Length: 87
Image 1 (cartoon, rainbow, N blue to C red):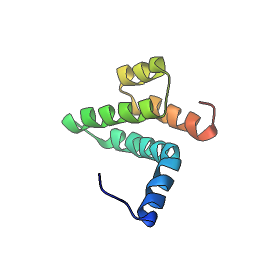
Image 2: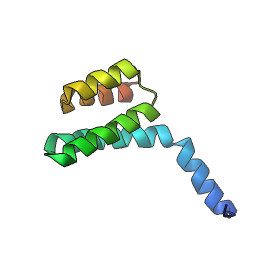
Image 3: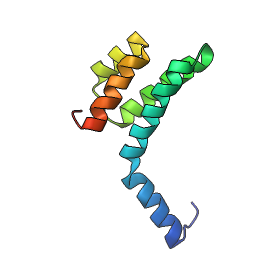
């Protein structure tokens, strides 16, 4: 494994310290992209959304509900809940 400089270690540490907010932002962007996506790209975006929701430790039942509906509006409700802090 490579040795990192102190600066690189600090950058990596800040990334992981802010990982939750970064994932919330990515999920919001995915929601927007899902409204516009078509075909195979839409499936890949839903899979990416699943990964992010799992990292954010969203309940499995809610993840399944969102993915079964394949409705960006339902995902947008989750994003809104995350931003308001109710999840």
